[in-house]
Image (cartoon, rainbow over all chains, first blue to last red; front, side, top):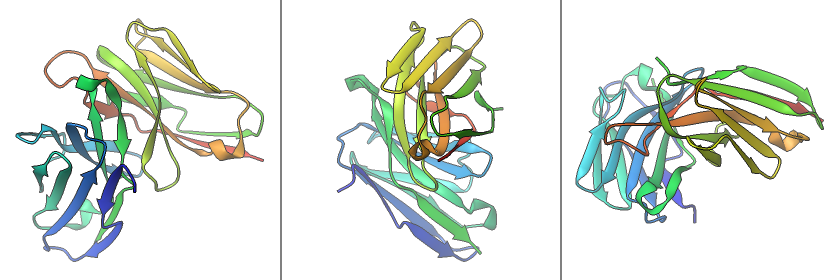
Length: 114
Length: 114
């Protein structure tokens, strides 16, 4: 099994629908992140969580919400999907307090909003 | 504005040649990291260099860091077709309580021709 698992891998949804992207990890890392990737824009941070009780907005949090259900699970929701949320979404983990400064990424969720 | 900006945006070379990618950033950092992304896949951590380090090696990878110029370079020696990917720099900005949170550049697309 992958260290960081994202589901679904691909999703097509309609404008206005609520959708949840899920991420689970077996690394035992404290920190989890959600990024989106758009062509030519690199990765932009949506939300991050340093532990189960700590949730923080990233640079582009509008239109998104998250839930850290457990140390191993971090979900991203689009409350009312719009076409400009079409992107590749990545979950990542790290644990710099234990020396794991590099991120471990999931394989991504390709989301299309029509 | 992006913390990390990479140059060139795209690089095309022949197998066996060296590939050099550059990253510039704006604010002081704790460390700088390089990642590789194969098309549409999750990013993979390659190497980390701390702010008090000037050069680091890992296999065919050589990373340099010049904090006075706020820049880093990634050199891949003796490139192979399998090195074809996008390469991203990411900075861990110094100061505040968000250490360990990375800001990614826009990436360099490397194509290695057999």
